[in-house]
Length: 296
Picture 1 (cartoon, helix red, strand yellow):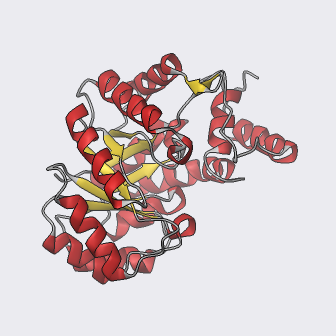
Picture 2: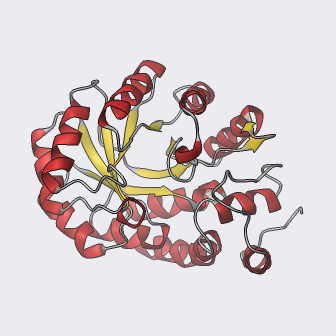
């Protein structure tokens, strides 16, 4: 399964401390209407770390149901506990996900051999395409290009990686070693276009929560051979990238969605705190500079 294009790392809206199903369904519908190529529930932006197992399953079910096969759903299913990840993968497959997103085991800090063994066990747990998720700034461990190439060569269901290292040398090395049939998706909005230029297949985007059409159009322009248009959109989106990473993701992007009136309750769960007042003021200015009309 070759995944290509712009995928949104979906936020998880809450209301009164619970998943806001109505708001989530509206958000998904907007994403599809605006041309997004795929959706990723229960990733970092979806606050997977503070969802209960029941809530995690609920969010994945809602996303698959609302999407109704119109675009691929890559369901977050990773864990630092291999057995727990196996269960989440089996659930995602049974629920009808098109693929799963598997984060590297965080906190444990496994060796490269440990990473290989972890993903080998997950590969055997259920027949579903898998995208690995490498974000060493959060997990404390990095999948080396050689390990990624070994995993891709040896394992049946691993089709790609979400690379959130921001390290274009590593991106280049992975693509060189894994080849054209490998879906390397940028997990870093700032380097999405450079990743495409190196042979990446797209982006799993935070800012697409706000600007799905523009992120889709940037990828589509690149794949159609219109590098100038892709570059124009890259620079057009740059201020929004800065706005959405003023503090730890997803605090700024959820705040922005609230200020724009897309979701009513834009709270995040502890230990993530609300955006600092100075940064909220900066966020408002950046959104206005990007041409957005604030509703709050």
